Length: 110
Image (cartoon, rainbow, N blue to C red; front, side, top):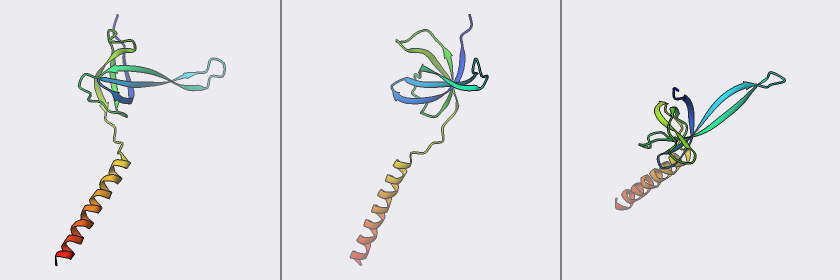
């Protein structure tokens, strides 16, 4: 029997060598026919910790590695372009403080 292959989005990368991947799909309501969004959550083995939250990844079914982990990472389809705004603001604040300190030292020395 062939192994299942799926494409999903990494929603958590907080565990070592494990990623939480959500696979989204749309299914029609049995009575009304309106399409409903559903998701499947898979825990995926990522040996090199190469994927990050927000990445779109391709996964393949594998032998069970633990209670929940039954998928392996094949490849990263697209990487996320999310930017950590808090880290950027902190870095800008530190740069401004360094610039102000350097400027005040140069005016005091003159």
